[in-house]
Amino acid sequence: MTANPDQDFVLKTIKSRDVHFVRFWFTDVLGAMKSFAVVPGELEDALADGMGFDGSCIEGFCRTQESDMLAYPDASTFQVLPWRPESNAVARMFCDVRTPDGLPFEGDPRHVLARTVGKAREMGYVFNVGPELEFYYFKGPEGAEVLDRGGYFDLTSLDYASDLRRDTVLTLEKMGIPVEYSHHENGPSQHEIDLRFADALSMADAVMTYKLVVKEIALKHGVYASFMPKPMAGEPGSGMHVHQSLFDLDGNNAFFDARDPQGYRLSDVAKRYIAGILKYAPEFCLVTNQFVNSYKRLVCGGEAPTYLSWASRNRSTLVRIPGYRPDREDACRIELRSPDPAANPYLAFAAM
Image 1: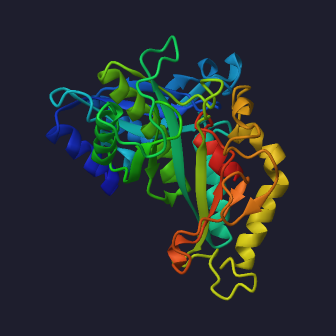
Image 2 (image 1 turned 60 degrees about the horizontal axis):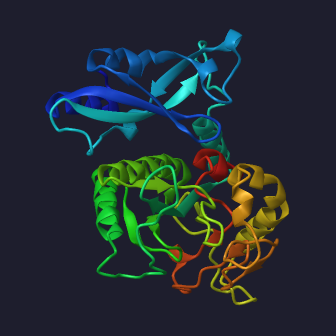
């Protein structure tokens, strides 16, 4: 038996929970989830030496002559999938992709983020993010027939999606992903579930899980969930507003300064961070807004940003400084409002 406590927990849980398949999850460069299943008998070897797969089949990975890749499961991400049967259960682990010589594969989005947060840690910072992902429910995948005509925070007797949201939140929590709140959004049949902030790598894993859970629970209820940035002309687009902050290695918020002479309670670190976001937004939008459809959302007249600007309250700016609890250090953060939920979260958080 392995001495690694996470791996030990995985192997014991597989026996005690009647797990018959473990899905290895990773993403392509566009953020589409990829997966293959491994039987428990192969798992100990996979944890030690990885599992081989053909990387040339994955969008953005590599050419055919360089196609041999290894998926190394991250035992700390092990979870049993609650929407699958309890007998002959199915679990999942996120994977790091490596080359045959054991080196991290540079085209693996999860590695790109891990490398970036590693650089931040060397500078003395932990990068925390709290995304707000919006999405639409439709009656089917072929059209845009909505389930309701509600608006912001509406609760109506016809809000069938309340049950969908409830089941989704309960499923996320069963998988160890804490949810802050969920509500009806501005558009008809548009909804939002916000995740409690965490370090960027854990959160990127959580976002990928979240998107799959929303779609799985929707299918279970006979409807279709879409994270398309602008699925309907004339209706609000769906964003992925990302609240973010840097904490030092002692757990203090490096963005907070109660003595800020301008009264924003922002430190010099926070202001320079905002300056960097404003400077590089035209470049990193390639990653945070990667589809043609993304730019149908970024138009004047809505709450999506169109200018390089920041403000303390204005929700049409690129960067907003939330002011819900202005005197609480842990609540001090900035909100980047341009990203959309179709982005690859690993690359999007790395770019930020």
